[in-house]
Each structure stands twice: as C-alpha cells, then as structure tokens.
Length: 298
Image (cartoon, one colour):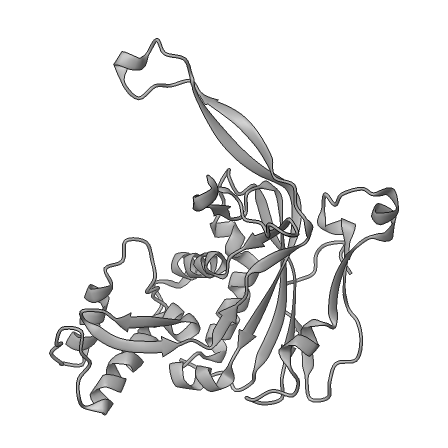
C-alpha cells in the first residue's frame, strides 16, 4: 500500500439517468425514490457505495488488499476468521482479545485486506469479533436538481411458469421510468481517519476510477442509461482543512438553461444544464476535476 491520504477532500459528484429507475424503493413497489415534499429524486448513499464496491470487485479483486468485504452472499464470520488464522489467534464468541494490541491487529488486518473497510468503514462485532472501523470516505444521498416525473408502464410476459397455466392470460407487470434526471451528491474524505484505516493515495486513485466508470459495470434494463457528468473536488492544504464543506459546496451551482426555463420545458439531457464553479475558492484549497468533462456542460 502507498502512503495514507494526507489531505482532506470535499467533492460534488453529478450523475444523470435517462429512461431508467436509478434507485427503486422496495417499500414502495420499486418506485424511484423521491422527496415527497419536493418530488426531487433521491439515490441513497448505500446504493452509490454498492456501485463503487462492485466496480472494485470486478476490476481489482485479484490485487493484494483490494478484496471486497460487503459483497453478495459473503459470510462475514468466515472473513473474520481469516484474520484470526492469519494472526494465529483464537476467537471468543462476540469478544475481542483482551490484549489491546492483539485486538487492534485484527482490525488492522481487515483494513489492510479489504478496500471497502478501509474506505467506508465496517461494523465487524459479530460472533467472530474484529472490532469496528469508521471509514474516511462518506457520501450523502444524491438528490436531483429538479423534480422528477416517474412514468409507469405495463409490461406483459408471454411465457408461463407451469404447463397447467399455458391457457391462462399473459402475466401483467409494471415498469417505472424517469425520463431524465440530473443528480447531485456530496462526498467527504477525512484524512485523519485515512491515517487510521490505511486509505492511501492508491485507494484515492481507484476511487476516482470508480466514480468515472462504476456505471459501466452496473448496467441493467431497469436502470436505463446512467452516467457520470462531473465531479468537482476541493483539496485542502492539510488534514483538518481550510474551510467548511458547506461553504465550498455553495460555490458549485447547477441550473437549467435560461431558454428552457423561459419556455417551461423539462430537461432531457445533461446539455440542458449549466454546472459552474462560481466565486472565490478560499486560500489553501485547490480544485480538481475527478471526472473527465466530455459533455456540453460547462
């Protein structure tokens, strides 16, 4: 592993969806998630973290230290046992070793071997206890810039499951669709926590790759066309930072183009929005673009 990240980062991440359901709510029949008061679309932080995990798993899982802890059908106690075996320790049900150094060595081993633990953190206090980790990278819910409209379509299935049902009418299903939505998410990287978990400059580089390409490894008919639009990152001069995150985020604006507003037309592509960094960036902070700008957005 390379050197742990030494600088605090705050970033604004934009992505869009065209003719798809970016994050269905299972408690609402898989309807796209919305703020019920504003009708703005929502995508949960855990949904975005899942896409990052899947990208790393698919592209880097064979590399040392880049395994994924929170993956589908993972048996967490078995993964914790690997740490005990590697360190030649014997687990006690639900307890960490009384020796603080041994307990720390278990948590450190998990951080060293699993990308998502040293990035997002994890609660590993199960029957085979490896402690808890607070991750340096945190994400907010993503929220659409404007209200979204969720269209509902009926679909049919011409096949049947059992031979006895062959003469029955076709099964009717439902499919939900957001014609277009531009979403904004905020992210934070805490350098002090990165020091503790080992989140490194190499991990940061991999995170940037994931933010740029994670939708490519997550395609499905239900999600339509999802893609990154822009990621504006603020790099602070040190671990503690040089300004509050909300002050920095207020410098980044995303607005519908004036001609669409004047004609009361809804957005249907990223080129219908203007994304800008407006105002003076505080001293000691530099601005980085983490997603290549290949669109008409300026």
